[in-house]
Image 1 (cartoon, rainbow, N blue to C red):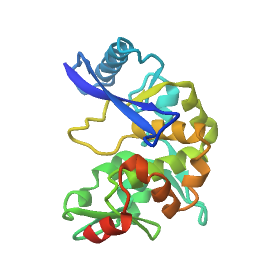
Image 2: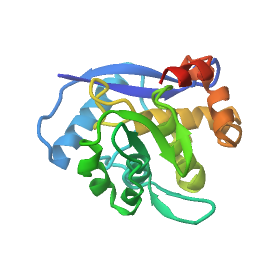
Image 3: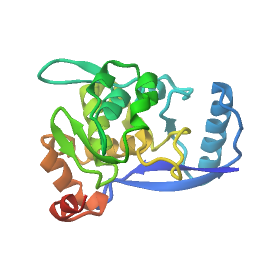
Image 4: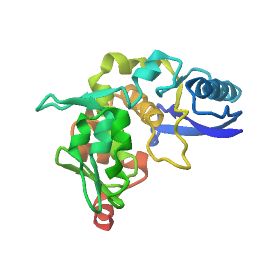
Length: 229
């Protein structure tokens, strides 16, 4: 047995997505077919909890929309230079460590190459993110990833709007005991923001993003937290 979260968008309240942990029989193995067995088992178990219309967002998804929305495949383009890369490559290239970074050449690598770049493991502890000279602190923990993925969704509206057809989202590769950021969680956040007509506002600037989502993240004073980091 295993436990994985289902992320569900909300239409009211300060929290823009909720998480429901689901127990299900895990199919061991790294193959795509085994991962897809686990996805089907997760969704089946979730239906027993009243969670029916779910989309798996990962490269292992059996739904092409879920595959296209994977951070490994979803692309983002810079406004000034028109440079394009995957969300995954952008995220890894923005990491700033105690002894190096950001390693901007990672932007030119594939998602798999970006995630496996040895410098990400040999440069000390993570201290912040730097994306095109905009510094993002580590607190709130998922803020930078959320902003990056939401920005990519906003640039790929035709694809992203398919998310509104689902009640919740999963990512079979995401283990909350080992990872922090999750594309399925951010997808739920996207749906909530769209339904509340808040997406354009939160993406208008970094300060607006952090201020509007402060209640969602449970953080009120970013100035104090930035000093502590």
